Length: 208
View 1 (cartoon, rainbow, N blue to C red):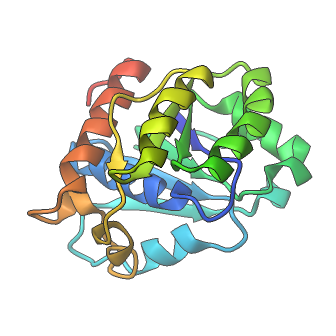
View 2: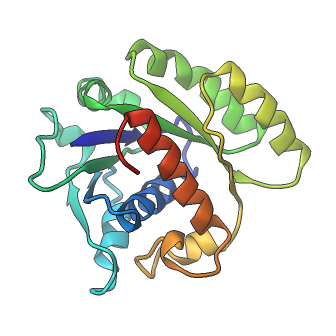
């Protein structure tokens, strides 16, 4: 069972949206997927509870970060576990270290904008210290100077995913539907999340 940890340094970012849409894209591509919600707010758990019965199967579990005491054990029949984290992971160093150290990849969504970039500058030293394969995902992009500047700056933080997720309302609108945009015909971001999964699968050495 491969494990992808999704984390970021600043609140209000596209972390949970990335988790649920990546999970859907992988599941639609034929992976047997589970998610682990470690955010006490439980947004990912709420989304999963809204999934239609006929939707592509995705298993889900919720363990708030303060209660993480050991590496997530392999789940029978599951190929991929995607782990969502709260923002303030620094308040739970032992649990956070467990999740980082078990991850096959750490995926860091980054929004364009000076506040997010400054936050990333403060977060990346810790992420690097865990010595796990890490990829940065530029998300909620627009046709703006902020996005152009972010595109240049995040290369200084580490390896960047060659896919960008634009800031479109179709992403938050799927939240209460319990869906991902890769499940909805005609969305712009659905194919992009599919491309994101294809890239991550190749990096993990697994079949997309």
